[in-house]
Length: 612
Image (cartoon, rainbow, N blue to C red):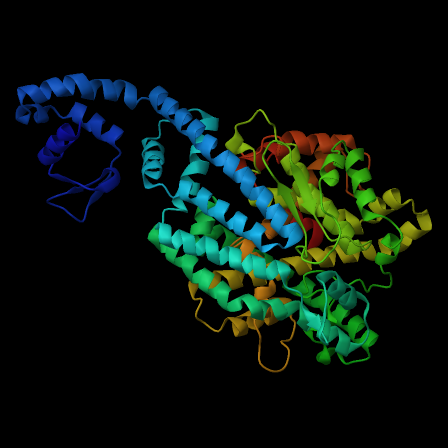
């Protein structure tokens, strides 16, 4: 076969290059990316080739070329090869993935170095599979042939192609990436900030920032939340450079571009969405924040111009302070948020009792200080990690994380293993946000907490403002993260600390603190564990509003969403399970959204719901 290809290449003045790419010898600047199956089609069409091929070569062509063309390159043959590849791939990857997931769970819940080391080794072993250049070449050839007609098989091919593409780097660089990532995660997860020499947890810090009136204590707590940033910043910047180096090896300008493209998204489209949201939220956010600043300044006994980052109720000002005449925490103070969440999900036909039974829900030394959802094996081992307290913040968090968890639990197990995952990372964020919003919903609070009408009326006076402000505020916060991370990967050697505060002032209208700027930005762990991901939270908010609109008008058949809580509405759970959760990644994310709601993703429902 190789001899025949070489003869053909000579006749066509083609120089054979690696991986099926040919160059015209008389026009070396012109390249043709030609998979062997397409090349053989050319051979069959070029009669002039026969004049230079010997008698024995003709026999070889008759015996080998024609059968290969009719069987090896046809759709049925390609699909058979693809099925065999997937079976072999899953046999290698699935057990390693399960082991790695469980190792990460152990590391996150214990903080033990040996668990992190085990996780890192397994991650490296998995990435080495995706690093295989011969297997990538096989996938690339099949993808370029365009002869996989089966939709599910083609979807699996896309998933595998992008997974392999991201990992086509030298083994030495791959080792450095895995080691660096693991080192930072271990340091972050086990780090505890200090206030006056005493270690504090993030739950302690949240409590101080939510309730404390003493400005000095607030500042100390806020600075304690940022201390981990200085501890990991140098390592993180080095990791960014390693990621960029890896991205350039596979033809991308930096890692950010690689992540967006292999995540089946488009940077221009994302830029347009964030620019539109910026314009639409500028005036509403300025108005809402001015009102908030007046309330906060009065409560601390200071002038509004003296407000600093620690005067807000969140280390990054990504959540609305609970200050509007009514503190929603009082309604959750004597309730069990775990029980409330379990009851709610059971009521809509999406029970989570089994998930909670496997979960790790309360704070302790050495444990990961925030929250996440976890899927161990794509066969039903789904859990969440939290550090619960009976507050509105943690009510929202457990509803949110269980939203992720039901996405994992209710995949259709009959679908291929590779497709038992969300259509996209932002679609699972959408489900999490759809449910997380309920913690500030007056109708939901009344039904779940058994509140009388008078209390619901009191909550309604402020809950709509809380929810609306929260969504607008989050959009502004997401703009900081989106633009910072793009610039971080474009130039990791620039003054990142100053860049961070430039963006915070531009989008969040929060003044930078006096004195030298620190690397507090690095205390946002997403830069390490979920790089180039944060924009997906905003995309999730857009989809959550689109799903909400469709459910209200098409599923529940209501004229408006006034008083909607979804409590006890099994038709809501049925719709979400059938249209969003069960298909997993069978469809491209926008195709799934169109099938579920009747139209592709659009920001208009988020704008209608919150930007008024």
